[in-house]
Length: 256
Image 1: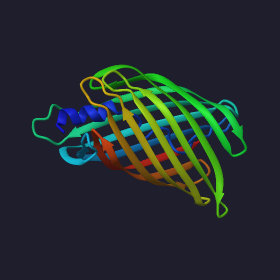
Image 2 (image 1 turned 180 degrees about the horizontal axis):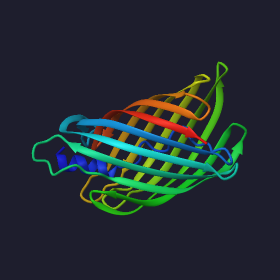
Image 3 (image 1 turned 180 degrees about the vertical axis):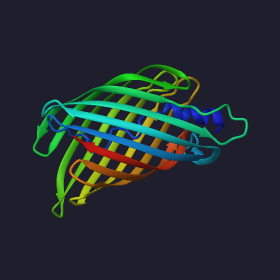
Image 4 (image 1 turned 120 degrees about the vertical axis):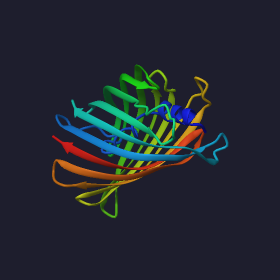
């Protein structure tokens, strides 16, 4: 895959980062409270998946990203969410045309549709603006979320599933997304997370359809009642017409 097509594939699939931060999953923010999550990531690309899903060597470059997520609980059934994401692609090829810097900023409500004890179903609608491949314009994300909390050997745990549709900014393709999270607290001060993020981009603008499936494992250390630190490792382990990305991230959580 050439540098130009590789950058286009990454930018056209530019999110968010890694979807909604796992602190919330499909649950809503407690009424009258805020949560801020800031995540910095660094990753590297050196291979890509072809049309048959086989890994091939490709142009090499790295990426740094910043994702900021703020949520506020208006009521028991309504949470307001705002997200800001930015990336910087750093080519490592002589004569490259320069680094790309896609970004997006969106906000909107998450509304509880149904609840039965530890199980909750909600819908989220975000709208805003973004830029990919040098062109800015409207961006949006609509998704259905379901979450269930339970206990494993007496320790709190939860599972979460989300299905959504993301309208990318001009220069980015629209995507269908499926995300899943499993979390468990083995100790009062620790939360362990295993997550999978899948995205299927539509064929458009001379680019074929693509599929990427990313896995992430992370640990969250609750420093106190209001501060937490998250460390994570992630990789794209399967895909079609997509770049393979592997990297690390560090997040800071603040409740107030």
